Length: 81
Length: 349
Image (cartoon, rainbow over all chains, first blue to last red; front, side):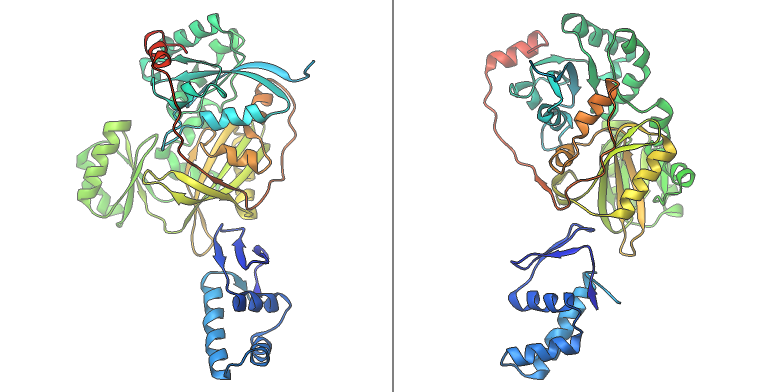
């Protein structure tokens, strides 16, 4: 999964879709996930990163990442490689 | 000494209200120009059009009759103004004026008054009632349309459309209707205000995206900026918008201008569906009221139109800033009763 080329993400976590004109706000974790996606990391790698970085169970990370990726897809912000 | 092109430009659409005409933003674009030194004459239909009282933007305003008085009477007033205050260029900004100004092009030329407008054929071809044929001719998807002229025809609608649908005036106004009763109410409102026919249009779900563009009459797109409305008033007017990066939409605009050889300003109103299909819902044959966003984004369309009208060369503008926004606001101008008196009694301020 990749973030579409027409999406810009600012340092503050403000996301702008230049094709649709829609904008979104990310919390710090969301911003981190999008940064990792932009670096070419896949869901498993991001999950591993989050488990190492935060004191949280695998079950919780998996569930939240699934939700987040579904949301990205729902808002049409991603493309498949 | 200034090298700027000195011009007297007459501009209509000074109704800078919550349903704004494009006059004031057009004037702002011209005032921003480093190439034009303009004296602006406002052409006003009502004595409380805010532009009349905007002394920093409008040098002088004349009242004019509504174009419905007929071309001859209307032009008589324009030429009377011209005899007092010689005009180099007129930029009409309201749909209802265009027919008159296009038909009067020759008369205006004889008096050295320039315009920069589409041809009558170009204007009529894109009428809302002709949208189906227009889409077919130029390879654009359009929602189904039906022009009706009486209540009796409302019964026909259910055979051809599913609800909801749009009921639109021939110049302005659109209402969403969910049943025949609502169609009837909307038909009465729209026909009372804008006359007949009333257009019934299929409701296409999606996001409305608009493009402001300027064609040179030879098939070249001199300027084009796409925008999405971010906030819409209860009249369906943009109160805020943002420029987009939408190559498909731009390609469609360039193709349409090339095919039609459109001359002058225009606004394409499109719906982009969830499947990324684009439906043309309307072409406004003039500069839209959000034109100052294009100026802010790097394409001064009023300046370019003025220069083209005066026979100057204008290189096509291809760059603009994506993510540039406009936010409208209301502002209380303080006026003097004496000014209101002058415009009301003398027809000039």
